[in-house]
Length: 66
Length: 419
Image (cartoon, rainbow over all chains, first blue to last red; front, side, top):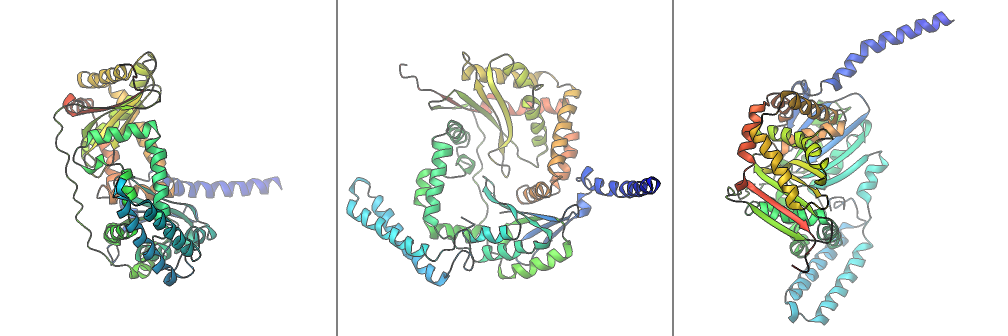
């Protein structure tokens, strides 16, 4: 049974190692890749909208400046 | 004021409320006209008008649903709902659970199209109270107002963001509504949305929800440029508090590359216990505290780098000013070692990137750079510019900016009753 546990640990560790750089990448270098990631759109009424998709947590932040 | 709702939020019956608000406006106008007579004002008329206003306000109160706007957001799990003003812009912020993201365009499009400035005169009193607390009865507030008024003789940066007391007291609801219609239009706004959303879906839904708001002809954003300063300016404020000093210099605003160099200078002088101010002014017991701040009063127009602090007895504000000047002159005459620049560069970059790790930090920077500096991508260029700062560039900027003809100071001290 302990071997099974180690097996699972190995699997989890592998998954962690695969996805960590992906998650890490969003935070470690949030500046350089921004021009490719930020979507800019102007609505028909002239409101300028900047959208950055970040799937790290199920949350959304808004800031409107006038 | 902007959390007071709209024609459908914050009210039980807007149709019933509207004539009451108009009645209050008329009575307020009459009250103001009577008050303007000064010593000639009819006291009975003033009292009668105040009673009538209170009566109509109490009738309107029965139709108001207090804090409904906030409650709708809170019930859906929102946090951090806030609004703030600066010299350059008004900001509105909120964080929502991803599955409730559409609440923002639903509520904000309604608020933008149909705002109702209900309880306006109560809020005006709150602003007056805030002014008293933060400026008139505060040593820092009084010093700041005196400093910017001395530094800016023509540009509106010399006027406090909250306004002068006399102006606040005269502001009527129709004037505020008119200002809102002209300036708070969608084509004068930028919104940044950061988080667990799909950009394509957001664009589609925003077009749908904001279809009820139309663009307006925004008045040209003209601000009288501040004429070049031609000599030192000094203001003195008497206040019963420990002495303190502010001194500053006009300089270019971002995206001018010299602004980045001045950011670095400010940090070099004041950041932490290894900074030049700390080692040479605080540790030598000339001052209790010192600080430096770049980018004041705003960043949309040419602005200032400001230094300040409180002298430690028996030293005076003049001694502190001399000590600060000594450090500024050192920047003009000696090249800053590269390792000292690199330390500050690392600190600024780390802090900047850390602030962008949160969704609201990122949204704040995106919206600010686009709305105020004209291009959100300036936030990318800023760090690149920081890497281009050299000892020679620091010396050149220090020589150009830190000149006596470009100098303004404000000194807060106790009044000498026996001069």
